[in-house]
Length: 214
Ligand SMILES: Nc1ncnc2c1ncn2[C@@H]1O[C@H](COP(=O)(O)OP(=O)(O)OP(=O)(O)O)[C@@H](O)[C@H]1O
Ligand SMILES: O=C(O)c1ccc[n+]([C@@H]2O[C@H](COP(=O)([O-])O)[C@@H](O)[C@H]2O)c1
Image (cartoon, rainbow, N blue to C red; front, side, top):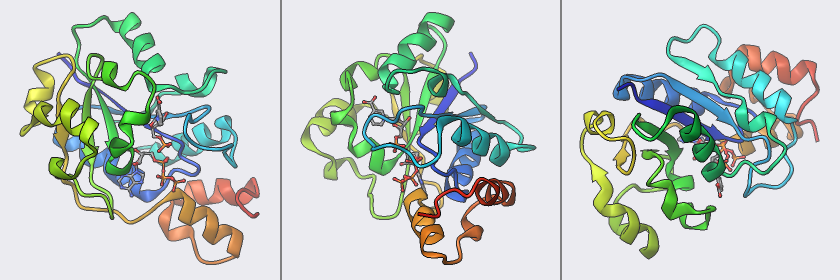
């Protein structure tokens, strides 16, 4: 059973933290990781780069990196990128026996109780949670609803994610990366230095498309 790992995000723009987290997950989980750019991110306002531009930046950022790919299915839909809808669609394609995991930053995981059909997500996929500065992973600090729904799902080893189709939560505990898309957008708009946080090919794309200047 080969584990499918989806790393959903707005990627406006994709940055070095995203790629480092994806590579770490690839190695720890022994699985291919697909970046899944949200066409219409449900809990964010309008994006500055279009869905097609964000997919293009993801393609550039993963070019030549073993075990990473881009899944553009949400960017091609014209409905909000609800994760529930995406996982239902994926399960219709691959059935309910193969393991699927959502790779997610700790800040997003803590907001899970606000997501569409969030409890049902545990029936469709595992969660792999990446630590992020400012967001602790200890279950005793989670919102009550999340704690009740998820704390007993925590598994200690990635192998356990390969042995069931869905329903577990794995804390990745990778080195923490400080980057954020909002900070990169703000630096570009202010005319400050920003290139170190993004792949050079993505930086060229941002410059040639005059993205994030205001
Ligand atoms: N530096 C990071 N370390 C760990 N996880 C991250 C990091 N940056 C983003 N993520 C996670 O990656 C996913 C996609 O993030 P997203 O595309 O929204 O980027 P972002 O940097 O959080 O953007 P913004 O600053 O605009 O909110 C989310 O689950 C988020 O928690
Ligand atoms: O399905 C939802 O209700 C939902 C609500 C908020 C975020 N998400 C997903 O979570 C992922 C990270 O979102 P974001 O906003 O941090 O880029 C991305 O794949 C979103 O589609 C999903």
